[in-house]
Image (cartoon, rainbow, N blue to C red; front, side, top):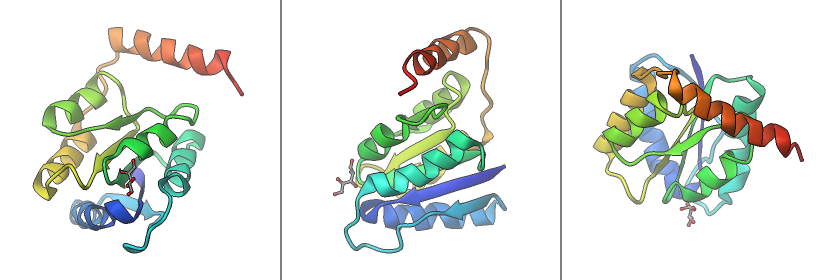
Length: 149
Ligand code: RB5
């Protein structure tokens, strides 16, 4: 699996921690920035990750901003992207099992590093359950098809 990852300035510190974890676990990741704590606009970074997942050039994505909210709103504009803002082990696991989330969103200002790394580990290790959950995803997909522009 190859990941796309990006943050804004507010998520930059946690992004570095997650990149370190991914490298320890030998998970390939393309880092789309940001490159420091200078103020930037989160949509510019969410777009790059969401587009690569939407187009299938990369398998899954991780986005980090202050709260995770702006990154979630932006990423979920892209067809086929199911971005999930997760806060703990329960939401991380459910986002994969029930929602087949292909983008994980984290908030540096609302999470401690240990919890964030635990969320990433669970999110990477957990499979989609399909079954009744697939029917629900099909309904989401139908919304995208009904509103192409
Ligand atoms: C930046 O100050 C902050 O607004 C951003 O990181 C994010 O939390 C937006 O949702």
